[in-house]
Amino acid sequence: MNEAATEKKPVYKKWWFWVIALIVIGAASNNKHSSGGNADASAGAGASTETASAAPTEPAITISAFELATAYDSNEAAADAKYKGKKLTVSGVVDSITKDVTDDTVIGLQGTNQFLSVHAEIDPSQEQKAIALTKGNSVTLTCTGAGEIISAPRLEDCIIN
Image (cartoon, rainbow, N blue to C red; front, side, top):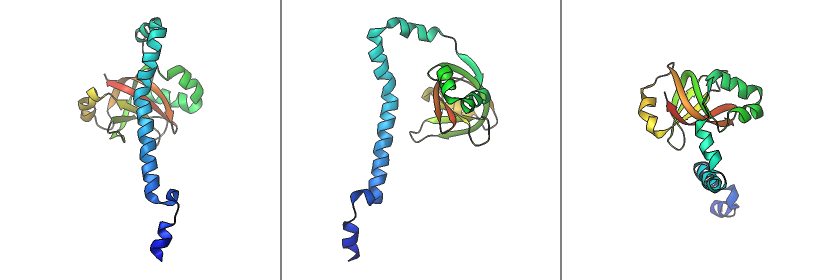
């Protein structure tokens, strides 16, 4: 009798359905993140080569991790307009060195409080340098601003200087 009751549950009420759904959503968002830049680059390449050549010549914005976290804490929309998609040179104190769900190395830099740090996703070519770091080290990174997730500023494609 118990087996019959279990079989009659709708699919969306079974635990494995939600596990598969989360995996599919995660994979889709990762593919969107990975290929999003390529689609934009190929679409924009024919439209304006002037824009593509102007971007690399802009100097990096120099800012501390604390200042970046404070800017996002004060006004996320204004901070996005100023830093998102821009080349940044960020200095700060290493709070953590971890791996994310896609096995990328992420350095946490001290932010405005002990719970929310600036998350810097390290370029794979820099992994050995990241491994050599320890919590408390001062570090300077050159990255691309990637906005904020759950009150934590994000940086991508970071090179350890």
